[in-house]
Image 1 (cartoon, rainbow over the protein chains, first blue to last red):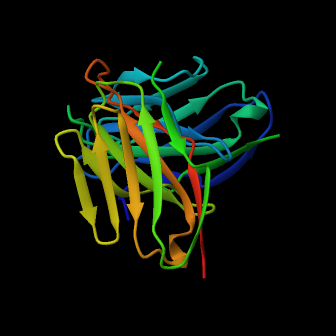
Image 2: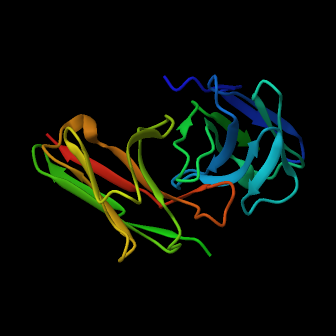
Length: 114
Length: 115
């Protein structure tokens, strides 16, 4: 096990709604990143938080937002859900390293937008 | 922009044969290259990784090679077994200009090991 836990594991939302996904990081890790994996594709970087501040963002619109808490747990919020937001959302925690973060994914949250 | 290309998209081998998956990356500053295995309906699992100061790394039946000059890296699986059947993803870290060191993933290779 990776020590990264996510909730909920599965959920269904209606287009236009808002969703919050949660992640509990591995103990001792100061960095959490979120990835979106659409069916049949590789994970796509959404953003990363380091010490409660966003320190990198992928090509996702502002309706994707996040938080990292002092205990290094994290939330991913998506507003105004669209059908294309249906995907597996993966959280990963790590120690930020200049020669690359070794990241281990949680089990993921399967989001279906109908 | 940053890009990782992965080939082949599908690979079918006989049990016991070797499998090779190749990736190329565009950002010459990338310095970390992990490989993930993803079984149906499950999360990607890290199986091996290599950093830019190493040319080759091996872990039992799995090995990864890196050619920084050519900007490509490969996954080698020897003595394949049916349980190796899965989708494999390569990835490259963002380079030193990117403070997040985010991972850029390839499009995946579906490996089928025939008994």
